[in-house]
Length: 239
Image 1 (tube, helix red, strand yellow):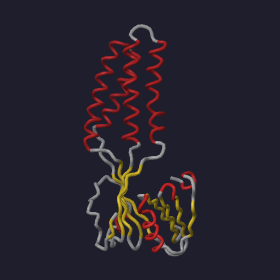
Image 2 (cartoon, helix red, strand yellow):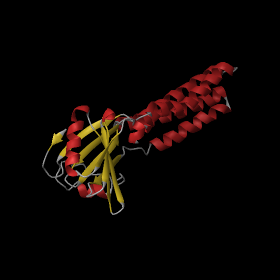
Image 3 (cartoon, one colour):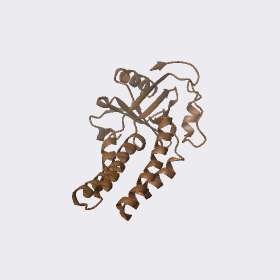
Image 4 (cartoon, helix red, strand yellow):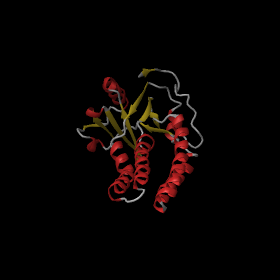
């Protein structure tokens, strides 16, 4: 984490197609009081990945248990598809998120980006086409049933050619009067709600363990009238 009084230390220029909020564009011109960057694992990511990729493994198991001739090839094919789907969903569909926060006198602005290497997109594209090739070969060996895998591989490959890193640029104002601060000490996170003219500003701040109290002090100094609420579970926190 860094403390600074300089003007907008974040020099990143958003991509034209990247999500950019009005609050971000306005707050990024304010003096930065405090900033930090943190990597946050996505809650339940492995469960979602196993659920999504488990279909291929289930079909592979059916080939192994109930298949007859040429069932080995089908089992291997769908095992590969299942494992690939699990890893793809986990590390691309639900990767760890990198947040870069900036506290200003008027509010908080930040960027949010999945932790996905640029080289990953190239590798995924190549693997997608490899899946097409493997699936087409399997069609000749296993039969028409393998067309499901071939179609899925082709669909993914076409989409992967257009994939690029997504960076969201978001922000929320500190508002006078009513508001709430949710403190989730177990998860080292704060959620700040501010209401002004019936418009709600909401921001979730993830903090390193050794800087949680410092971030809280900065936020509290900007919104001393906000009501504080301690939460003990992730469900209560809502993130």
